[in-house]
Amino acid sequence: MNRKASVLILTIFSVVILLILGTALIARSISENNMAKRNLDSNHAFWAAEAGVSQALKGLRASYNQCGTDVFTGTLSSVDAGYSVDVDCSGQDRIISSTGFVPATGTIRTKRVAEAVIKKSIPLGFYDNAIYSADDVDLNGDSYTINGDVVYADEIDNPDNITGTVTQDPTITPLALLNFSQLLSVSQAQGNYYDEERLDAGDPFPASFWYEPPTDPLDPTTGVPNVVYITEDLTLKGNVGTLGGFFVVVGDVITNPDDIQDTTINGNGQIEGAIYTRGTFRINGGGGNLNVNGGVWAGQEVRLNGNAHISYNDFYMSAIEALGIDASAQITSWKEQLNPYQLTP
Image (cartoon, rainbow, N blue to C red):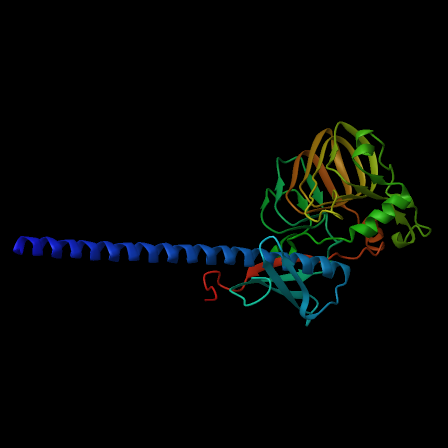
């Protein structure tokens, strides 16, 4: 009898232990499942906050004076998330606060908040430099020369052959965006629009900086420069001869704002004018020298190798500035405001 009682007690004890373990496992499984759902909600809310920033940038490019609370709203139907964007216009810049939330309708379970600064301005001194790089300037060898000021955002190597001031300014990154729709219209009216087909065909570039020479030889603003709009990488090789104009190397930036194209020039020749490229600018001078008489803007690295020479030309730059090209709104800084691990219960 005592043995049967002992077996019964042991059996009951074992069942209780198994029930406790089973309950703990079920509770842990439920907790992990809830945590996974909350983490997924948090990710979806973050995507929605990012979408809100993108929508605000698009909207402010169309009209820069949209200000207030809930200026831009929308949903991401694929993940059941929404966003609401406030725009602070108290200064020249626009401070964007984008709140992403889940679900898109009903009681909110999770929020993520992103803040961005959007600017629309041409920096002071933008037209006053031989080189203006929103990244590094890499100068190789001792055969290069730069006549004029150099402004860069990150680092510069071997600046010994620069005649002019050398200034580091981290605030110039990202490179100021010009109004590319304006530039496109001007280039098309002048017959200076170069897409992939025209570049592949080898159509020549203008040989002069001027589309219409100045009516007053002492006043560059009385003339009109050639605006050469290029939708692909600009690559020049060999004896390039003499080319002229304001070269805008920006790709398909109007329909794809993230599009970036590079400029690479190898060989010998003379470029009378300035080059604006959102990517890298590389120039490799041959035995007969390669000269840029005007200036260079680059969104990424500027690199000079060999007999490469860049000179600032105030006359040309004044004519480009006189075109009156506006700036385009762009994001200059971005951060998340709400701790992603503090999820709404």
